[in-house]
Image (tube, rainbow, N blue to C red; front, side, top):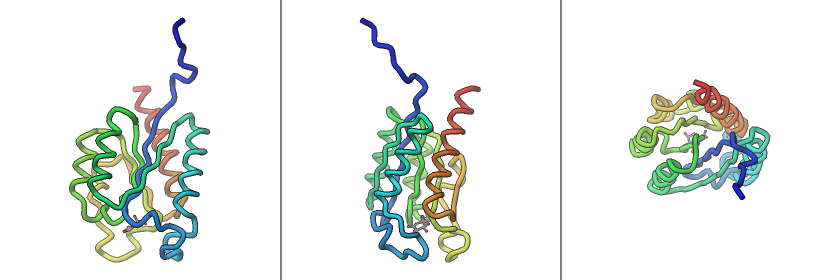
Length: 158
Ligand code: DQA
């Protein structure tokens, strides 16, 4: 018998966390907040469910692992939310990976990177992503996911 997909419009989104974000909760809580990465990931998965979107989360301290995850998303996910951490300000490789796969991507930061040291003001990702959300603590991730899903729905109607 032919199987009918019960949820044909379900989206799939990859959430990528870069270096040092595994230490959230312990790491400079005055800047990054008290939520742990596990708590943020749980909320992202729940929020995704309410948006008919499967959310997969991955954290790595290694640039190449993040590049590989972006490449692998090509066959699996329609969108990416990324907090590249310090690689935001250094990584041409991450920028090139996102440009190469052409997957709509939203850049997020817990802190407002423009209020901080000068070296954080430049993002290698900003000019190739759909948009950037910076400064709302863990809410930056949730706003990022919501905005990305809305964007994916918009472009699927075009
Ligand atoms: C960050 C900001 C970066 O400058 C920093 O290196 C991080 C976290 C943020 O979420 O505010 O690791 O991306």
